[in-house]
Image (tube, rainbow, N blue to C red; front, side, top):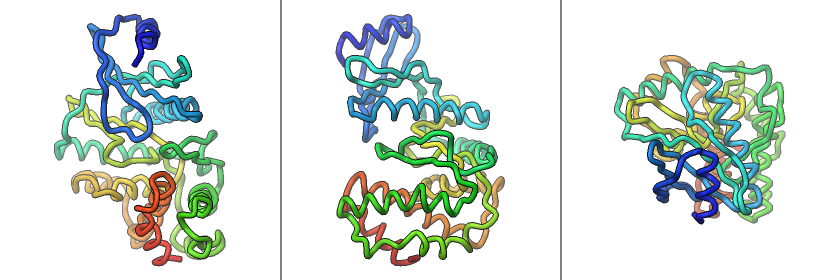
Length: 286
């Protein structure tokens, strides 16, 4: 981080910055812990074309979750552009490894978030899943929303990138014919949208926080599908969650269908190492 940016951030914080140290773990942006005499802050930096929009929608997503009053998010202090780099400045959450009690709190609070509803699926603005655009055009039916705003755009992108052939990809109508019996009586739920193990924190005093959201109103099982994609969370998390929102005989099938979206995103972002996982689900259901 250059000195001009340090000075700029000092003016925003109204505090002198004493130490700036890199934080590892992000795939898309550079991240730093910014310390002053009294406080610590978290800074994300990115100079890509979409960075300003990505950070704006991330900040808005954190605000939407926070305003639901169910589970905490870090406070956003600034979101702006400085010398051709976009930045997002937030409070720094000192975190710890989760205990069983922490996972229970996370499960209960996520279920409470999912009980925040809307009259439509989607959102009043588009955002991003990783660095890929995510369309949230509102729709009254979950089946149509999930097909047109989630699966079809990623399938088309994978064909365009020559990661899938068009013969491997089902038509929208074929997908709809399969999903209509699975997607019954689904109400819009406020989702984090990208809930893997790197996108929550447990603070030192045991408070769960959500970070890096891709927010919209969708089926609550979408977030659960993402938690299970790369190893899963602790069993106590799922026990707590499902004490609030029940499973049915189609939950495990729907979870695989929801994981298909995230696997397509990974295929389009990171390449052919995800082809096998995508192909398996496509062949199994379509």
